[in-house]
Length: 256
Ligand SMILES: C[S@@+](CC[C@H](N)C(=O)[O-])C[C@H]1O[C@@H](n2cnc3c(N)ncnc32)[C@H](O)[C@@H]1O
Image 1 (spheres, rainbow, N blue to C red):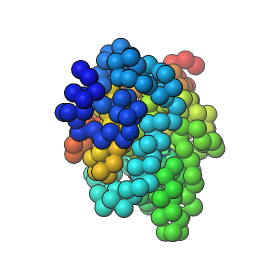
Image 2: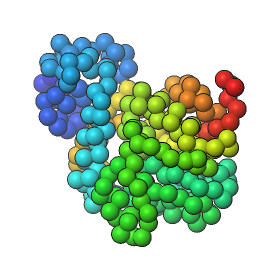
Image 3: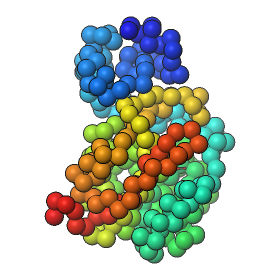
Image 4: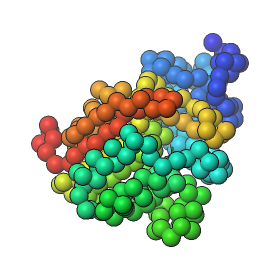
């Protein structure tokens, strides 16, 4: 299949030629692993397109959030019943502790956690979200989960619908840094979309965002490799796509 054919049946927004080369369709893992630059033309940095190009995909995603923040907020709503249950479980595990929220976005989850007695430090890598949070009186930090210093030690770290923007190596790296940023009783909560491969979509923003899909076994492997013990991993039917809701604990792991 050539690039034009790929583009033809797409819901994908081709940002530029190089990016379109990389993202022209939802890729199954085995396809991504075998696709070569020669198939799709010039690859960024000359990589096989199965090799993540540093910063490229999530940086484009962040640029989309920045440009379309108002549109995102129009679609955004307080957490529904399933998310409320999840946040309640996280809060019960953490107790009255200090929590770092990654990718706070509009900040709905932080509000809910604070109502339950947690102290939440909001953060994001999209300046437009930070501007709004600060205007509302919150101390919101710029923090890019791929590279930023997570600080700590925190009692809990939460990232709802954020780490799905990282590629697989980036998620593994982030999980290891998160493990070092919590105390021995630390709790990690994050949600990702369930499925195979990865995809670009213009849904919701009208601009491209990149998602990496996960299955339970691979996600469990990533967590245990990074020193986390999975407490719960729930399969949740979302409005449009299925999700995985993770609650993990620091402390003793199978490796200890
Ligand atoms: C789908 S929104 C979720 C927002 C919020 N957590 C919620 O559930 O309402 C994704 C959020 O992740 C943030 N984000 C994406 N990539 C990020 C990165 N590398 N570092 C930090 N935040 C990131 C975006 O700016 C956005 O706020």
